[in-house]
Amino acid sequence: MRKLHRAALLFVAATVSLTACAAGSGSTTEQSGPAAAPGRDDKFSLTVWSNYSGREQDEVTKALESFKKQYPNAEIKHEGSQDDDKITAGIRSGNPPDVALSFTTDNIGQFCSSGSFQELKPYIERDDVDLGQIPDAVRSYTEYKGNRCAMPMLSDVYGLYYNKDMLAEAGITTPPKTTAELLDFAKRTTKKAPDGTIEVAGFLPTMMFYANRPPIWAPNFGAKWTGSDGKSALATPEWAGMLEFQKQLVDFYGYENLERFRAGLGQEYSNDHAFHQKKIAMMMDGEYRTAFLKDQAPDVEFGTAPFPTSTPELYGIGFTTGTIMGIPKGAKNPGAAWELVKHLSFDTETIVTLANGIKNIPSTKAALADPRLEVDENFKTFIDLATSGKLQGNPVTPIGDAHIKAIGDFATSWQAGKVPDLMAGLKEVDQQIDDQIAKSGK
Image (cartoon, rainbow, N blue to C red; front, side, top):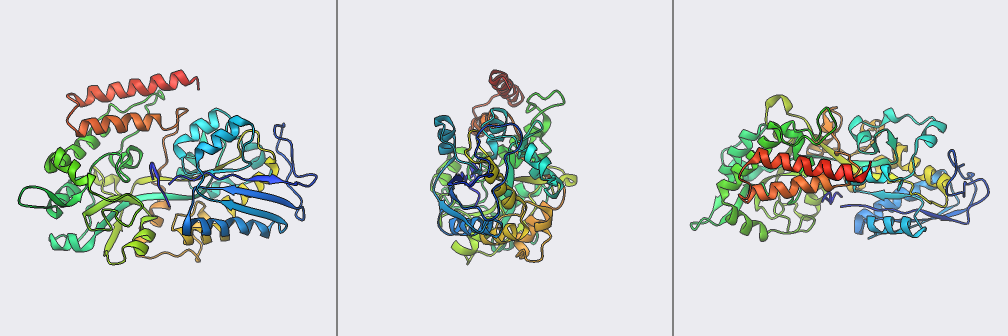
């Protein structure tokens, strides 16, 4: 599900526009206090946009239809292959959706600080919603500086995937737990042709490729985004250690050689993904990859584990992100919109069914513990991480993902050998991020 980055890792935008709303459903777009919910028997139509497609869109449609348990006369139309740009355009044009679902947690700071997503605190207080049902790390990426403008709908957790056969062939019986072991195992599982061309990479370190994004990597090195003063704090031994580790692997392969190899690999969410094609032995990825492998590469014998860490005491830490839901500014029916958001956020049966359908992590403690949740050995790794209390959420700023792009671009230059002084370069990135935040006025 997560084309995070989808950063890269799949992003969703969902829109709920409600028409023919009955009296009492809260049709005022901007008002003080929470808008009233529709009556149980009121008739209204919901149009939902999302960036889902195919099998995943079908599963999300089922989750939306479950809203009829509460509002049996609701009509729901789900349109897939939509994106966040349309949400923004709708707000600017004065024709926003009533509910927006998005995978872009990088933008939560912008959504909240700009007022693009309405504050949900009045609804939460009115309905006595217990936010303690949501794990701390998940709560962290759905609010900004005390402004809760979004709620979670499932989450992603990242860990290590490894090809069991490739590790066994190299005489390795257990997955790596430290980055020192990862470096050693990557070298031992790499295969090169006589001319040095890479045939199989033990581990692909290229930043911004597949799930290799700074927020996903940082927790495993104890790297923090800000200091006690709230300013960017990338010029630290932890960030430097992360980049130096990646550079060791790049230098082992040879930068140009590695780039040629990477250029021939398949797209992240295609059947030609490098791990599916047995072109890489180990990788960082989210729990959703278990479903892709089962569907697209059933012959790959793989295992999962927490991602290796720079020090043993960090082992078991990890990164989490997920789908967020908000009510955009100018929504025509915020009262009914909140009811849908609340349903998708807290209805345990709906959450578990959807999690089973698209193999994402439930975003409430009750759903995580529900016996109906389908958990095999490889998926259990991510459930254990999700319940460990050691996960870290997305770094939230008012400049969207500009801070992630800044360190990502720097890391790319560093790997290419274009940065003569690592710490000096990281200080420049810190200044760049601080300047952008200052200019935002938030």
